[in-house]
Image (tube, rainbow, N blue to C red; front, side, top):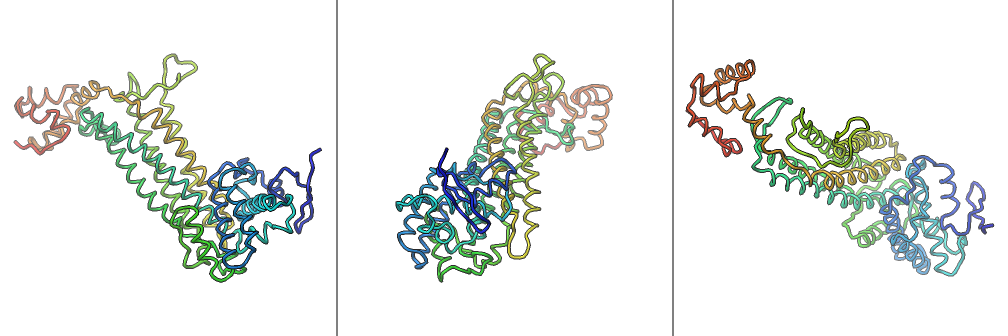
Length: 469
């Protein structure tokens, strides 16, 4: 049988398998919170951020004389091992849990304590030499350690997400250039409007993605202000003089991002407004991406009975009964991912609203919603780029013929023959099936063939200029 060690807390004692680096409080969390089945080990950036927090706290505590330098050295060693990802498997508490993240914080405290004990030549669980609470958690509370680590992890995860998002902007911009001379019909309310190019359509997608990238970068900056050193509610109880400033300075240096200490630690400890704003911005991005995917499905619809202006790469057979059918499966899966992200915005909103007095205990579900949303949407965007956007082709002749057969091109005649006459031509064309050209030039002789050729030249349709009589 595997050997165990006996650990205790104020609720009692438990036998902990000796190979485990986490201890009794994490063990209880595993028993209590079987919610998502997703442990924090699935969020390595979060674990890394916890390691940074514990290392910075140890160095600040040493400087302030709160812990022995040898103990601080052992904590820093254990934190470095955690930062390096060597103990990710020991972070087993569920991402969604009660206790405002206490189980996550204690998971980190226990793992780092036991790594540190071995570094000092002791056995796991010999906490009289290095204690999870007294030493690793010195001058801290879950209420500043957890949100500080969460903000760092979220900031780093957003860095990666934004890079992926920038790839989508580039992919659409390249298609915009590739399709710059492909004439097509623009549509409003799914009805013929006026001519444009397929390139202009795709360039607009790139532009709208670029706008959201900037909004995300702006929102990301909100994460740089942290409450480390606030301890329980922001009054800095149990923290030595000067500890918050020293700790945040060490933390910024270790992570390599410009973290700052909040000027009002009581406000910072309860406030979750930054998460609401970031998640709202992410929802905005998801809405736009989903709308673009709707467009791609419409533009590729058919192929014989739809718009059929573009071809999406064929990725798999589309039906178990209809031979030869190919569905727009990539835009469809991206749509569904966007729906998830949009729903998680409400989760974050309700969790932020649920804060009471000096603490918001719902931060774990905020972390879960934001981490999963960034992961899922990033995967969806990369899938959209690799398996759809780069392989899109245009049906050039079909697009051109639809323009020239459209009634919508009559709009170009407004400045010359007036709205009423143009509307009359449109009505007759719709009723009889005749072309605008036949009615305006050949039958009513409202303009000459030469003027028609000028108005409906490819250059003028792509880049319209005002033409009068």
